[in-house]
Amino acid sequence: MTLLPRRLDQTCIEEFLSSFDNVLSDCDGVLWYGDTLLGQANEALNQLRALGKKIFYVTNNSTKSRDEYVAKCKRLGYIADKEEIVSSSYVMAQYLKQLDFNKKVYIIGMSGMTKELDDVGIGHSEVAPEPLTGHVFDLVDTIKLDPEVGAVAVGFDGHFSFPKIMRAASYLNNPNCLFICTNTDEKFPIENSSLIFPGTGCLVKCVEVVAERPPVVMGKPSEKMFSVISDKHQLKPSRTLMIGDRCNTDILFGKNCGLHTLVVLSGVTTMKDLEDWADSTDEEKHKLLADYYLPELGDLVSLLNNRNIQ
Ligand SMILES: [Mg+2]
Image 1 (tube, helix red, strand yellow):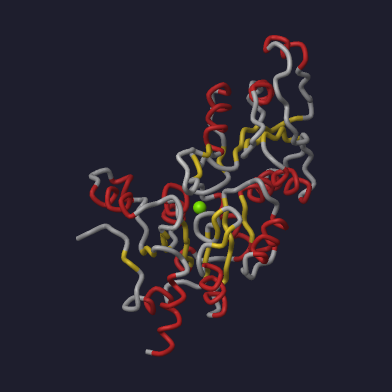
Image 2: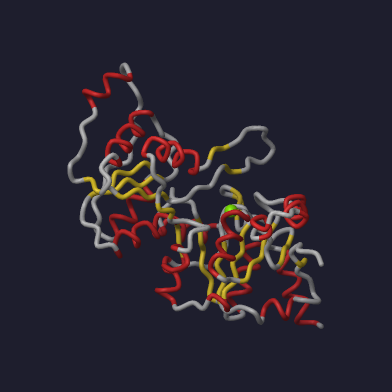
């Protein structure tokens, strides 16, 4: 028996559609690539909505606020409202709110994080570049810590720098200071390039090493992301489908939360990856294998259209 995900086709489309009421879809690599729509993915998701499925956009990307995500969805032809957007920044804000956190958050990240904290009334440092300007040892005299800070949150930050690491590590030297991160994604694919685009995970790891303790992860594959959605919208895991392109976050998240899973091969994961994991004797690798796969989400459109004429 093969462990490979089943190719979603006309023979199993009815069984597939009847297995879920809710859809959680990853964004980058599934719905779009950067600012470009991926094929007919918008049509596919909108058709699932027309069939009565609840749709949620679930992303580890912490750089945009939910309002900015709604605008992006609409620009690319997706129906969306703010309640349907679940980003790692939003989960971070909800997590701190649930803890009744009443101090300030030192942010390594971008405005997507600060806007979500503003929404729940939690104070934070401003996000801005903090480059090293003088001698590194001068930082001992120039860095002043804010006594109000009670948490360090690390997300994607293109202006990551030595002074920021030093500041974060100094706050985290207090064992009562919370350490959280938006996600631990390793890297992003860049089309038609031999360059590698580093993900948030490498920034988190950098702070983690000097802090000598691990962060609480907000994004996929952490179950925190699902608990924020399911608490608010009463979603049953057994009636929920997770769609993603990165198996160690999206699909593992689905498996961790007891969801149905569909992997699309339009982003990070390749068919070769699926074959290697299916052949592996390491059971941890088997957790990365979704129930179904499609080359891309837009392929669902013809499957949905053809079921009407059968
Ligand atoms: Mg993705």
